[in-house]
Image (tube, rainbow, N blue to C red; front, side):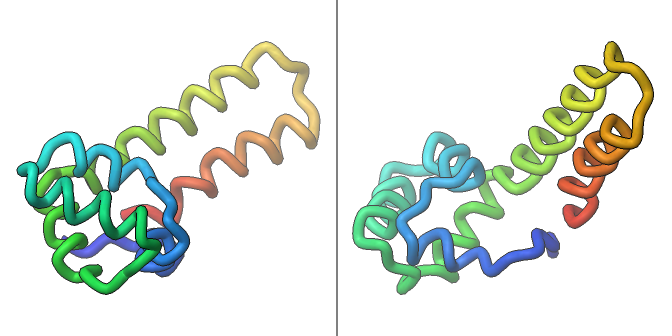
Length: 104
């Protein structure tokens, strides 16, 4: 499965960032895979990036994260419904759409 996310996914590991795909994977993988992710985050290392990416893909966390991003974009647009029409409302709705347009 190929997913375009518009960024270098190894950067999050190198920066020690625990992102939604990593959190979901951590919670749905074997203890050994969970430990591998946690160690990579703690040490801010992308050394085992290919193993982690494989584990993340097999856990279903990419699909889960994409679904959550799309859900949040829809909720954001619904929250705008009560506002009067304006260029600002349109830009905010477009921004919600754009934020998930790079996902496939």
